[in-house]
Structures are given as structure tokens and as C-alpha cells.
Image (cartoon, rainbow, N blue to C red; front, side, top):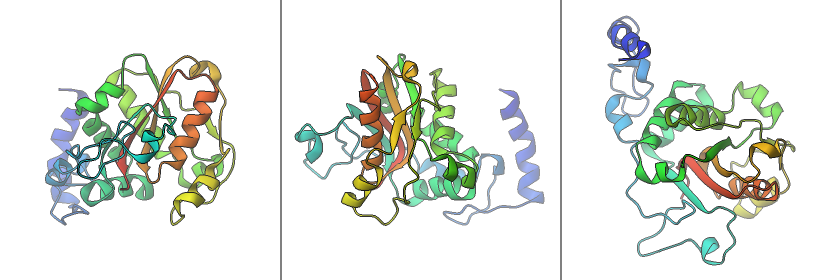
Length: 242
């Protein structure tokens, strides 16, 4: 058992009694606060979805084999994976990370992703992990980039390199929340650039993000990476909006 795991085993029971906390999903008491903020039963609900996916990672309706964009050959992504839809326990977990600064959530999400065979197939030994960047202004406001935290945890678990500075967001765009699919595409057009070409040229790049909505941001990033010479671009996210 690692030192961290030993400390959690010793400290968790004390915290549960002295500073009781509740699961934001089901309101049950947390028996293991240091593994929070969800209870273990709700963390179990964050496991990979059994739904069919397109090769780009988009969830499909019953009977579908690929999404419309991939059928038309319009996706710059060769493969993709998300744990599940942005709902239920997974949505709460991502929200706790992104908006409440619960950074330990990144470790739990990485743990769940690393346990999935499809995700591990994307994370081949030659891959480099590149988090979807925030604009420096937004990163200063938030204090961290949740995609970077997730990529770092995945890299640590799987022994893969992480290139957090390879891709930059050069335009301070409006928040994507609430925008239509077309508006999202216009919002991020030309917003990303590769700053360190040597880290991605002729490499398999796995883009890492917390939530994929329409995929406009991921595709804009992938196009910039392709133009910089990446041999392959894949997408990995914790959640995806249907």
C-alpha cells in the first residue's frame, strides 16, 4: 500500500466523525472523505457507459454505426472515448472539479478511464497527452485547467508523457455554454494554435478534455494539431453531452 493510501486509511475515519460531509449526489454521509466528494456507491456509477459509440467517441442511437460527420469523412479525429453522458453522478463529479475546485476528482475520473479497455486502446504507448487549453485569462480566473489535471493524472497512471504547453488558446472566446452548434463552431474557429510543434509533430496525440458538448472545440484543436504535423489525433473526455 502506498503512503498516500495508508494516510487515507488512517485519516478517513477521523474526518468522517469530526468533519462529517455528505455526497452531493445522494446526500449520504461520506465514509471516505479523502476519496470524495462523492460516496463510493455514487463513484461506482461513474463507470464506463455500455452504450454504442462512433469511432470518434460520440454516443450513437440504437442501430447506428457511426455519426453523420464521420460518415461524411469530416472529422479530424481518428478515435474517441468518453466515460458516459454528462448526467447523474458523472455530471456532479465534473461539476465539483470544474466549478468547485475539487481537484482530487481528476484522480478518480482518471482511475475510471484507465480501467476501460476501449480507453486504454486509445492511450497507446507512443501517445502524448495534450489537454484542451484554457485562455490564460480564464485559467487565472479559475486557478487551474481541469483538462490539464485530468491529463496529468492519466499520464501518471499509464506512464504517458503530457504536453500541457503544446497547444494554446490564442483567442479569448465567449463561454460555449448556451451557444448553438453553429455558434460554437464560429466561436472557436482559429482560436487554437500549436506552440511547441516538436512535441506533437509525427506523434500520436490524445486530446484530453473534461466535457465534450458539440465537439466544436475538440475538432478545432485537432485541426491545429494536424496542421502542425501530428500523425494521428484522438479524443478522450470524462463526459459527453448527447
